[in-house]
Image (cartoon, rainbow, N blue to C red; front, side):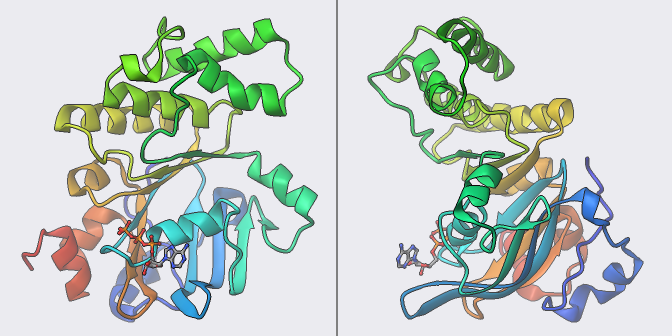
Length: 277
Ligand SMILES: Nc1ncnc2c1ncn2[C@@H]1O[C@H](COP(=O)(O)OP(=O)(O)OP(=O)(O)O)[C@@H](O)[C@H]1O
């Protein structure tokens, strides 16, 4: 749930927010959905980010932010099981994601849903069939049960009765909502969004933000969101990490509005104030 004043202390972060961190409670393990400890990530010889240490609290909307190419998607890949860290550990539900057996990792990742930028729907399948796909793959449920669940998930994102439509017959905003419904098909504890409002008009983007908040509040799902959209991140973000492309490291963590108003790091303030410091 929102904890506007709380900070997530980290050994590696800049000391600029130390005074805020000093007052912050340290989360116990039960309140943490994901924890990174001194994680380094890269491709081939290139290091994209290093020294990443932060925690994502359960039922928070956690924002991953920073300029283009700083490594936001790369971090998301590491947290969703697609990219093994060069160094350090990622704990998901208190288990070290990259140190457990492959079978245990697959099981852990069953609790993770991902909504990609485009919604990533199959255009030749109806909305219901799209949502049914993971249910058919990973559950022993009957066709009838799966159909009912798919309709339920569509209702959850405000699209009750649209199960028979094809992706091409609905708007971009609706397609994103279907993407959310599909990411939620297996009732994940943690839901990742890669730039959810990209390509949406302001009203549809706002509706998607409201949906993220509704789902957090009604289901308690932990949401991890990559976004550049300042309006959106101030509206939905309970906590955030700011990544820097130049130093390949995180500059700070904290509540987005607090960082905007009180961060002593010029780059963070400039980013969150649209260039005005
Ligand atoms: N598969 C890959 N192989 C090699 N380099 C990659 C790969 N994916 C990303 N990179 C590089 O890693 C760096 C970080 O990319 P990433 O996509 O994670 O950043 P980002 O912050 O999500 O960027 P954007 O905001 O532009 O989407 C970039 O320099 C990118 O070129």
